[in-house]
Length: 452
Image (cartoon, rainbow, N blue to C red; front, side, top):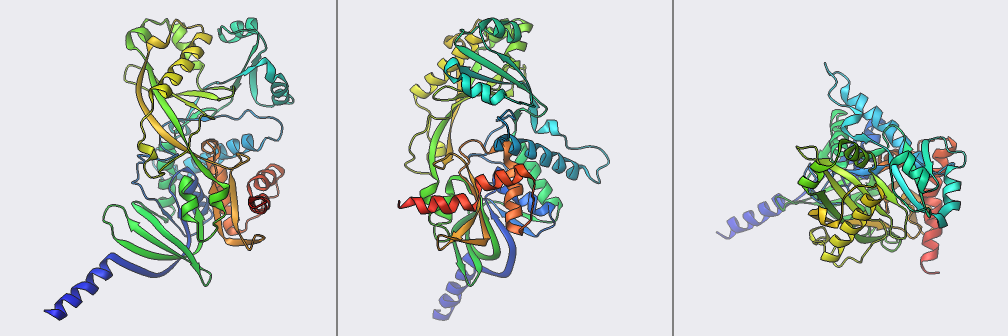
């Protein structure tokens, strides 16, 4: 009997804590937009890569959750975020072409991912210098209303003379669907012969003798295992700080997660149906919008229902609050004040569109607590880790601190991360400018300033 108990003990230990002798070439931790984009770029380069994600293949929470993000290109001369958005569009086209290779009919299209529509920017007269700098030498197609009369003539809007309006017109500017993009990225990774493993939560990450030791818990079964890898990319969004605490502890000081709320509103059906065709067209052509006030109110059309009525998504870029528990923040319901803020700002914008709609015409459908990962400068990191505060660790890359600006350029961030992993060179001016803004030289300086 005693021997049987011993055998059972060791059998259970073996089942619940397996260790793989295989050493992976590259492991990417985090299957959201950043991790998936990086794993795809590595796959495109012909590398062996394993992507691990703690959720299922369909996201139910996280910063990559949802069906719409603003995709916009307009920026001042040599703006890195415009470059990242356009590079991401180009990389997405490559992904679509790859997925369609060998198919008897075209199964994938850019229109699966992007809803091209004008992007509206609203400024105040006090921001005139910013507007002039933005439009100086601008190569993207746009229209600019510098006063109320021009806004009425160009856009059918009803604004004050202290308001400035710009509309950007460019293919694949409008909105991007993260849910579908992640799905297609995973399809591309798998088609290349690489692996995506779901329900795999990393509980420990260390480095021993130049090899990364990754402890993983299966979120469905509770079983644990350990895998090893020569190189690692951390792309776990707000979980990055905890994830890399033993590899690069300074990231927990340099990237701070904050909660933001997102509201989803619909216009009451009878009210929406009473709008004229011209009014409905003006409404849909006026989304997405970024109102560049102190809170940065932004809104977009998340989806259309079966009657072709829009579901509006609303947020405030600077309405950030502290997080008590990162693991449960996604479940936090919106307050009445947050819902009212969403309704009032939406109603204000609809009034600017000269539409006969008020707060009373807006119904709250659902809310969502999102998390932004914030750096001090609000510019993300795509960087090697740093050893001894000055040496580059070429075997480790972190992608994080997206601050709500990652989605539109996700495949570009992934491309840069993959190039760092492989030591690839790209000498183009804008690539180097973006890499410098995101990379290790800045990180070294930021680490130095932590205690200063």
